[in-house]
Amino acid sequence: MLYSLVIMLLLGTAASRFFQMFKLPGLLGLVILGIAIGPYTTGLLDESMLLISADVRLLALIVILLRAGLGLNMDILRRVGVTALKMSAIPCLLEGFAVTLAAHYLLGLPFIEAGMLGFIVAAVSPAVIVPSMLELRDRGLGMRKGVPIIVLAGASVDDVFAITLFSVFLGMGIDGGGGASLLQVGLIPVEIGGSILLGYMAGVLLAKFYDYAGGRLGQMEELVVLMGVAIAIKLLGNYIHVAGLLAVMTIGFVLLAKRENTAYGLEAKLNKVWAVAQIFLFVLIGSAVNIQVAWEAGLMGLLLIAVGLSCRSIGVVIATLGSELNYKERLFCVLSYLPKATVQAAIGGIPLAAGVASGEIILAIAVLSILVTAPIGAIAIKLSAPVLLEHPGEASEQA
Image (tube, one colour):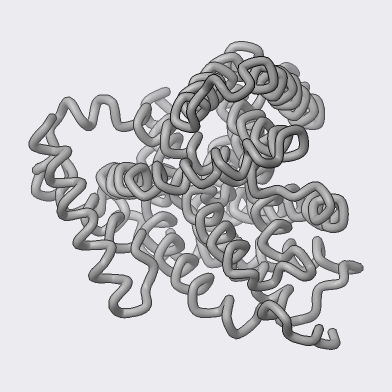
């Protein structure tokens, strides 16, 4: 395993820097490195590292979402909340059902199995979107209208809808539990509300703990406590069937509201942790990509992905209707909602493992969606932000 760590850290840093030299997102270099050293190509990564890959990726995601929560200013979130809420549901639902229908009629998949595919593909990638939006927030791009916050908050809840509806179709496909599965759909608002409540309670208790501890804890000790609580909340969320990662982000949001100075100090420390965590996250996402499986999806897989992204883009346009965003900012939101990676890598193989007849084609298209949309989305965000978003101090543009 130590050999794999050396490869990931040294080659990962070099790959990221290499891509940045060409004004491309460093994460692209990390994903490509992961593909190159993963089990489906050269096999340089140690098997023991692959066995804990899911847990390592989860830890990196927790770091991302804590940073996201600590960056959610209450005043900005209050101003953009309605738009962010619409962004969390409308694009995902349009894309998911569009891919479901396309897979059913174009590939001949049974409707339930097509639904599994639809909502695997429909999830956006917080691993790509959140760090990109945090970088734009720090640079002040689009912040007068809170554009990065709209995308960040919407994308974080988007996955709740996608994963829940995937679970609904999976449940109906495996055991015919249609009634129970349809009940899950009705419980989506309850799950989101429960997640926020769980994160709020944890954030309040954590703020009180920091108050009680006073200055007796160093910043690194405060960070260790925060990470420990966040991991515990994620595990508790799994146990009580609420979205643990959304609860984790809520912890950061509550801390920023309750203990602003502490929150800023923790965010600075998390930024340093992220410098290492992102290497593990994106390299291990790349290592989960089986190019041969993606190749088998062929042109029909690309067509399904294109149909889904087109409908997602329409959904973003609908979600931003009535907002104060101008056409450039709305176009940026469309581009920001393209990348997929984390959820597809995590659950793309579940139908195949569960014995679903269409499991191989579902996995192939899930993998293909990572290969196509992660680089396109990351590059689109990086290149379009300076052009489409308002810079700090600029006069507002007319819609």
